[in-house]
Length: 388
Image (cartoon, rainbow, N blue to C red; front, side, top):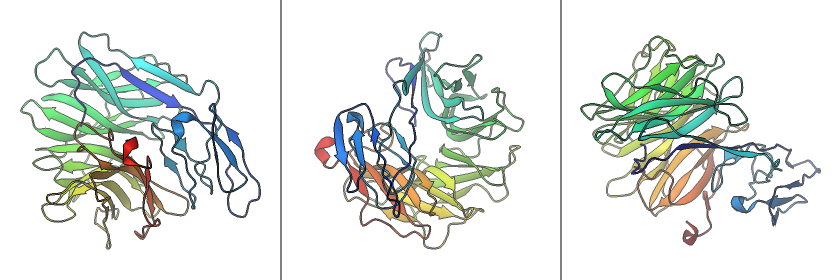
C-alpha cells in the first residue's frame, strides 16, 4: 500500500547508469580491476581488487554466478561470474535526479516502480493524491522520461476509474509494441479495495477491454508479467484484511479473464499469505515471492512455484524464518543456471503496511529450481542489528 503523507512531497525518480565490465570466473585466469569514485578498498581472495563507493559498503563475494540488484539504496550488479560483488566504474554523469511537482494545488505525486520501453525511455508509475479532499482521492499516474532524465512532452498521464476514489499503480511492464501494463489497486467510494490492472498503448491511451478489477473486498495487485503466450498475470493478495490469500489472476491481452482464474492460495488454512512479485521461469512455471504469517507470529519469507495453469507444484512452497521479526522476499530473478535469486528484508521491526523495506536487514539468498536451498544460511546485511 501507499505510504500516506501529511505534507505534499514531489515525486522523485533517481537512476544510476552503471558501466559494465567482465568478472573473473572459474577457469579464467584474467582479472578485472574497476574503480568507482570513493576511497574504501576491498580485496577479494583472488587477484581482483575493487574500490568500493562509501554508499555501497555491503559488497561481498558469492561462490556461484548470479544476477541480483541490491545495496543500501538500489544498484544493479548484473555481470554474474564468480565476483558478483565486483563494483563497476561509474562515469561522472552516472547519476541524475528528476523531480515532478504537480502544478495543481495540494496534489502529491509518488512513484512506485519503473521500467524501460522499446525506445529505452523510462516508464514510471504511481499515483497523484488530491489532499484538498477529506476522503482518500488519487489518480493513477504514468510518466515517461528520456535517458537524460527529462520528462517527455505530453506526460505524465492520469487516470481515475468511475466509482473509484483512489487509483494507485504498484508495478509496470512494457511489451515489444510499447504497450504499458500497470498493476495496483483502487479504493471504491464505499471503501472497498480492489486489485486493478490497466493497459495503455505507447501514447498512454487506454486499450480496449481495460482496465480490469478482478477481485475486491479487499484485494491488492503487486507484481505483473506478460507470459510466453502474451497473457497478463498479476499477483498480490486478498481477503478480509487484503493479505489473507495469495492471489493470482490471468487475463488475455484483450482483457478477457482466462478460464478457471483467479487462483487463491494459503500456506496453511487460516495462515495469511501474500505475493509481492513474480516471474515466469525458463520452464514456463510461475515463481512467486512474498510472505506468510503463522498464527501468533511475525511474517516469514515465502517462495512458491506454480505451473502455467496456476496449480501449485509438489514440494512447494519454501518458507524461511530468521527467528526474529518480519521476513519477506520482494523480488526474484532466475540466473543462467536456473537458480532462483531472491532479495528481501528480514528481522524487521514493523509490519509491511506503510513501512515497506524501511527497517530490518537486507536479505539475499538463492534456491535451485527443485527448491533446494543453495546456501547454509541467507546472507544478511548489515552485519549486526546495530546498523539497521
